[in-house]
Length: 392
Image (cartoon, rainbow, N blue to C red; front, top):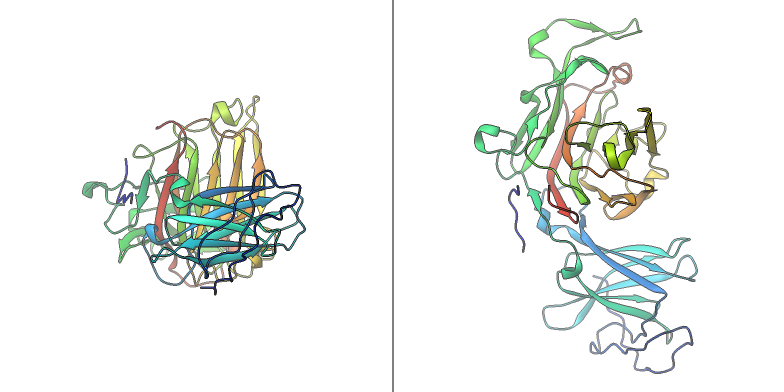
């Protein structure tokens, strides 16, 4: 099922006129011919690998439609020094070319570039006579198969919604909290998930398990597409502005249809936590990505962890929206923030259909660290999936 689906600068560098003096490493040669304001001439080389990913980048304070996000161009340059400049050019409306993104390679020769301009693109490494590059197109990226821009109240099943409240709580990890439909609302193109005092237990305190501390009972915003939408393999992304306080965590995650079973991830499915944010000023940065599955003996296995060096991806999680995504294939999970890779888990992955979950949960173990004011909020601008496997 698809919701609200629509299939649908830096200054340019001078053109280099030299073409033909090619290094031995180049397997084929091609001169760019994009005009005086276009990119430099370059040769093609098998050292440059490029993949156009979906629209996975959109940082900012304002809401916007999923179609306005930037495509991510993932490039790897073999045998290249760290810090080498890689530039992305996009075809302009007048038929010329404009530089739209420039980044430097990491220690593995990898770089992620972005463009909000649809159509033809050129990726160029360096700008000297030995520059290498290639042409690609945003048409090479997977097409979206599920989109919710929250332009309508899609958490109301009576109105044809595709999200339902996951009515869990007052048990397990959340004896002092429960999910409730009142903690999830859609307005002005945004899904707002909240943690607030439980109106059904007003004036009552909850005894935290194993602690002397008591806290007010809470309701949580907790919605998912179980029974309404699921998929197997592809990209899933959500543009989220988190809460700021500790004591609850924003999350975008997935679970296997029908629950997890033992036998490993491929057979038994997995929980895929694309992101969890535990609040500003967390000693470990506050942001995690994990996956959980049951092995052949039924023992829970955990892979993933805290996002290291979080400041390189942003320090404004509760002030600006960021796109959190996972690329899920049979061989690996790749977690990204606005197109930048934060975790790559290379192992057998879930082989079963998974459904989407968005939540702001206050679990018993984090409530003693609550340092905010109720209600706390998490905002979701949009959620989108690009399926690459069999349709669920």
